[in-house]
Image (cartoon, rainbow, N blue to C red; front, top):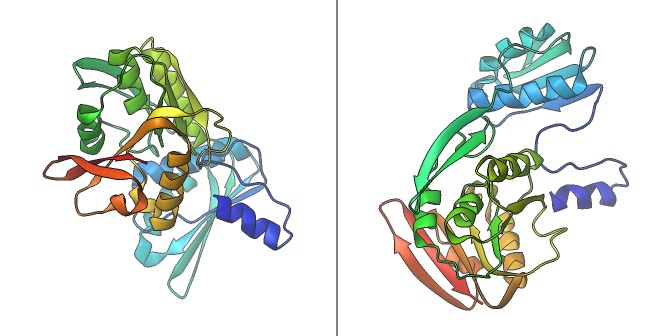
Length: 281
């Protein structure tokens, strides 16, 4: 996201960069090129968000290569209005003039999950990470986290708030949660309330707008985002630690994120699929 803003400034372009995918403002035309073979549920949810934000009379343009599975998503748009399709050199463009929202889109999902001796309820939706269940990596991370009374805790890249909610539930801390996706932060906040927990969920690009320091920063980081994002994320996290604070992250065992951490770095746990690493800068 910071690179988008820098490139706009570099080229003198007047545009707004929004955190997260889901549209917050009305528009006339939206262009969306989903990643190759993205989940149908995810694409439907994102298109639904665009249809809702643009409203009747807006235009949605969906584009991608035939090999990317783009034709799987065009049926959804046809349920929202008149569509036209164009194909050239192996690429497909589908234009839709929106007339109405499709039925059954943007539907919340609910599930219960147990960890750390607690069972909590969560509300999510397609487009959020592991929206149907508590994923194995986050569960492994939760098993390794210890929190002392009075400590300040941050769930970094919180998604719908699983880590922050479980820590608030069984340690009585008031956890802070942050994500650069406004939809994720919204659901994290909702899940705190759903379970009667205290805490806060913030929309933050890295640590922009977070003006406090923490004893523990826990994260199941977005490894798909690439080395540059991960390096920036973990480097900034170290700056937000209190003296004696620690960062605890989980990632797939074939990866090595310890190279982005400094100070005393130790392996807390290694399972068949994941590693939990702790750093004390």
